[in-house]
Image (cartoon, rainbow, N blue to C red; front, side):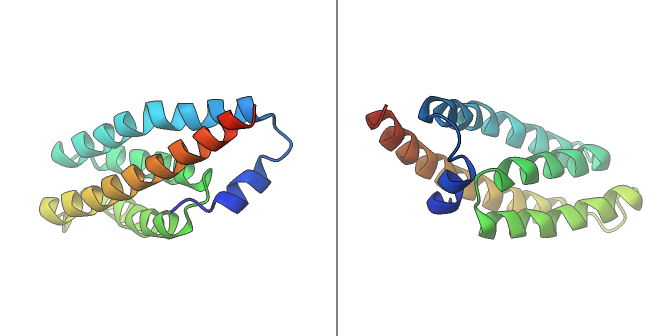
Length: 124
């Protein structure tokens, strides 16, 4: 869940319209980034899996969802090991299950950010 207080404090020096733009970028891009992660997993592209997991970690960090951030950090460590070992021990089913958990959490994040966006729009 997005830590609304921390998120708004982090961007307190920005105009609400800029914060809304930041939220809009997340809403427009997160599903595409997740799809790239899924493709990398299915293609056994371990470098891609590592890259896109890192990419999502940065995206989530910007919105202060600390529980999801820690979950992705743990997954990223696994993807680093897979990349460095050329996939030794890769379990596609487990990886896809983890990605599905990330997808569900990102969906919740999108809902939270949409609510924050609506509140910000009311205060423009």
